[in-house]
Length: 330
Image: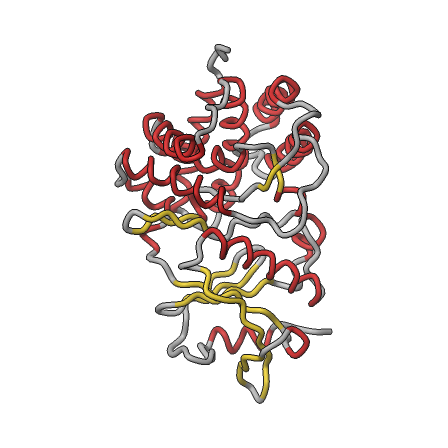
């Protein structure tokens, strides 16, 4: 059976053309990431059964390459200064060789510019070191990035209502993974609220649009510029959603971890760029709750191996409890 082990060993040792020194190695559920001084190399795993069975099967070279190509294409459009290239590679004579085409390649490495860790949006939120003008710029710039994105192919013929009903089902399963922090009674309360609202917010007449998996943990704000990062969802059905899902995923992190004033600044920048209508209160309530129910479990999961996420998970969870206890005035 094919193994990525020889390539991973060479990457860990820093044996990459044009690089020197051993990189910092970060392993995620779906990938292995290698941080050199100026560049970052990402390799998607072929052997994670959890991902392959529950999200998208990238166990074969063909499927893994297709996902890597989509990943690069989407992210490069949103952050061209960061996403440099997709490089075909193979192991040859105990070294990594760059090759010119997929047929000769064993794997694809996604190569990005390395951004300062302290400039991640999550770190900015933890340190509370951005201004309202910064938050306005984040919303404004994301709207511009979203507006200029060109989808290769066509949007699926799926209604906003059907899509969001599927997302609520996924949320119900997602929150089960952190039942020690969000017990069943509390979890059911949130899901019931979403289910009661979804038919009032969405219809079968409206269609989905492109959705970016953008939030504070995969975005950077560097010297006044907002860079989304790694925005392609691992599950195909999550790449499309009703309008505004992406901006509320991003803005809700700011609401929960910093405050409402900053949340409003993001939305003001976003809507002002698009000259669009502000979401009705009922839609906003739904989307803030939905975004929170993605992020709170995620932070608790990350906190199991990264203590820095624990405080944020608790703070976000407290926000969710307060927010969903409010009377919805519509």
